[in-house]
Image (cartoon, rainbow, N blue to C red; front, side, top):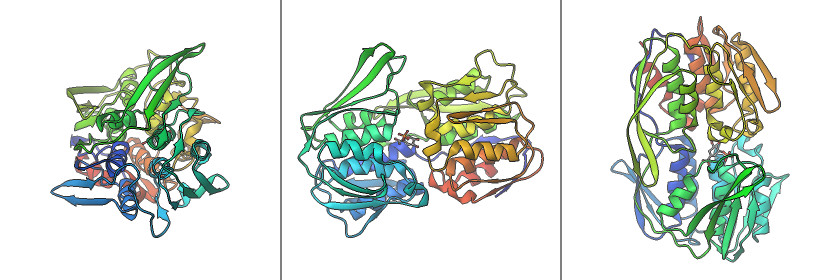
Length: 442
Ligand code: S3P
């Protein structure tokens, strides 16, 4: 994909449905009682992987009348698949599904593409094994062979990293465990969930007996979520908001190009996901939100972003670290691009998890920004990006959708053309990304 700087961006962007919420809607309805409809389900490759593997597990899923209809099989009603389940590029599919399959009395194998095969699975293998599932893996990585049982033991598990995928995996296994299963997050300074909480909200919406509390510890608070193994999920229609992580690319693009006005409707604004908006506003981006409302436990609203002619010297610290990192983990690559526009740049720390995403996102961002003439310093747990005049260059997506899209935005700020190799991987989360970008480029 070759991209040159436009004059401005003007118009409305149609966002895909939220990826995290779409995965959960399909997975949770497949193990509910009854039938329900999902509206605005993400048409991304990742969410397609979830639908594909659920069908291979016997779930009845139909796409019609612009909705996705799922007939639930109940908590232990999925069927032994005929072959290995290919989760493609999707970490959310493999980790959440493992929690569900741990409670099913058959053996199944989960695998995925080259990137997913490199990602760490010990974080789910250990707790699921202590709950009574039998799991074999290739040095703690895919393929995972899971032999489940509906008679799991409940556990109290303390997460080593603030991961919503791991938290969700254990809560889903907890649906088939005797008594209450507890998941404790790493300590945080404030009484907020330490990672995205779509699972808690949706399981509650579907009728699960799920509780959240905070335990005071010397460093602050530990978020504690419990699920009762006696819970049943009852199917209800789910309306998926637009994906704020997809919106983030256009927020930065529009904010950074003078005379731009970009509008996005029905964007998910769950507080555990919306930190990107706060950061952009803190550093001077002109973002307004209207029409806030809540459906199915998830807040949403309409966003308008106006381009700045330049950003003032930061009034706040330009180091982003600590608890907020988990709430903007997927937006760090695009915020690194934003940093090139800021007089004081930005530094990200406590973000070592970025090294085990769809690519090593620290290495990928540093490499591509350097190719584009940016001032960058790499750390084991993050990077510092200084104010930089970007120059068009050949950059690499490293097969990672968010890197492809972040550098499409970097290209908009650069002098001269930028070429992104393997840009098609954007379809993993946002199939229409490049079309939407060219539609609003003037
Ligand atoms: C996700 C959680 C995050 C995020 C990923 C989606 C989810 O991963 O990076 O893109 O839907 O739960 P971790 O939970 O591993 O941090």
